[in-house]
Image 1 (cartoon, rainbow, N blue to C red):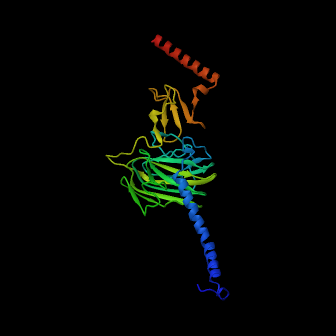
Image 2 (spheres, rainbow, N blue to C red; image 1 turned 90 degrees about the horizontal axis):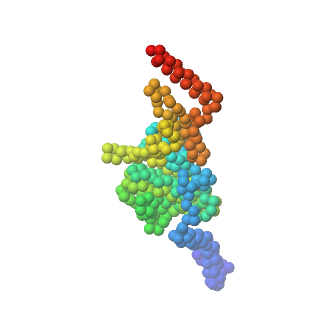
Image 3 (cartoon, one colour; image 1 turned 180 degrees about the vertical axis):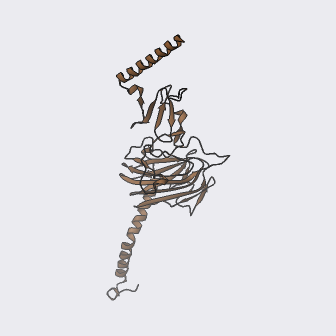
Length: 326
């Protein structure tokens, strides 16, 4: 722009004033770019000091799973994670209340996380092969990153990591083993929100990871799928990922046998007698530490049990006398 009247005849002063004004305007942008470049260099060398695995070593404060109410609920209420809404088939039981279950009909889950220290990493879930259409969203109050790795090879499939198959530089979408992936890109400033969409059927297992870089970082990760593949050549897997077959439950004492309903709770009951009545019954339910708690004849008061045994002996004696008379 032309120099104002006060600067005429003093071009050096005018140029210096203009340079200072431009510098003040552009300085924040340059500083932000410099900070971003430095953070990118730091991320390239990033190695987590702690790996938290949901359902394995994560404390309740570090990460916990919340799943939506059953479709019949019709409201936004959240389902309890104990045993009121089974997610596994009736001939199976749930392995862990903090582990994502992948039913063939599809699932939606949310994991709330907290990184108390910097450089921590959360393994949210392992997506089984055959998953149809996967949507993921990560929100946080500080810089975090959404990363997806190939569970078989360890290769980075999607995320900020340099050399990732689908990274921040991928325009629009990219393909990996027949699955089309789209990634929002790396977001560094709060509020952080990163998304990823996988369209198609996965041919191998994938690991969903959230990485944190600063102390006291809080956020959530949401995962939604349309289901697992079905068909004659690719049947629904058994057991359902996140579940186990009832027949493989090992905490029942002989002659008791496990009975399941698809929830966390497993009932240990004696096999049925000839007349259809149970010979002996008991219940095995998951306690706070995951150990089985049994209830049945072992907890019966001594006088009651003695009376029942005396009655059984008397009945046996009467039957013997009747047979002798005959």
